[in-house]
Image 1: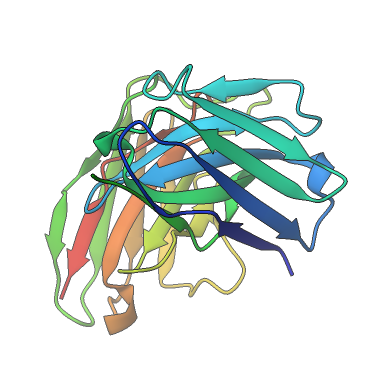
Image 2: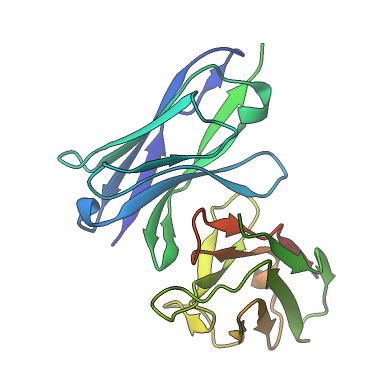
Length: 116
Length: 111
């Protein structure tokens, strides 16, 4: 059974940093691209970052470019999102999502709250 | 980026009646391999999205057959033949044919 379990969400002050993790199981992690998709409270969905299977190619939405860094450790079946210079508008539930035929499996999400 | 436009954004329905959601893309979603990567998702309050339909018309495992998807090119439709209580929530279309993947605004189905 495919499982994606995120962690690391927390309340952080504006300008602060946070690292999200996503542990994958039930499939060969290195065979799949992975994305981080966020959802602000009461809002729609936005892909903020993506990484291919071997970690050699990454993507960032303009809204997070130069502030967030995506990475993966295939030996630990873990996806990461290092978030810096956090702003109020980064407040959202962050989902770790596997890319099969489009987004086929989603984690349960982890909440990032940004407030002073 | 490909713009995905859903309608309606709010969909009040009656139990047992059909429902239909439209999704239009700003450019063709035919992928280089000839497939069309248009997928439909359902999100219940407090839950992560769950995929219902992939590649326009293929139901995911465990998805009731009252859900169906159709369309081609830039126009796509999700249909529910008879709405049940568990169908409430928000429905999203997401295209994965062009980089970056993009999302419809969501359609809130209410009974």
